Image (tube, rainbow, N blue to C red; front, side, top):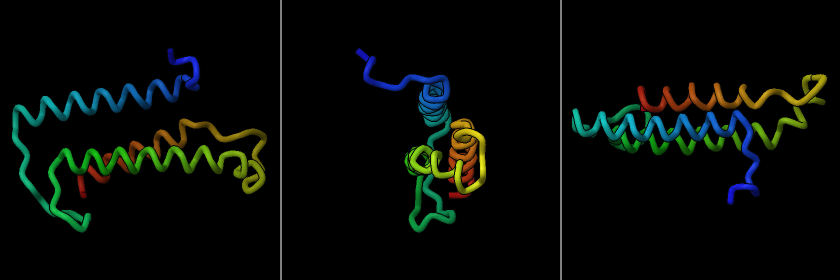
Length: 102
C-alpha cells in the first residue's frame, strides 16, 4: 500500500511528530480553550491556526532543503549530501517560533 513512498527514518520521525502535535493540541484545546491573539503574523490567530501555518512552513522548509541538497555539495564543498536531519531541526525550530510568537 505504501510502497510508492520513500519511508526513511527522518520521514517517519517527521510524520510521527506531526501526529503527536495534533493529539497534544487537541488535548490542550479540550483542557483550555484558545483565545484569539495577534503576534507577528498579520492576522489574529488561535493555537490551531498557528499550528497549521507552522506545519505548512515546516513542510516548505523540508521541500526546499531536499530540492537544494544536491546543489549544496558544490556550494559548500561537501563530500556528500547534507543530512535531512538538518532540515528537520530547522523546520521544528521554525514551527515552535510560529507557535510561540505568531
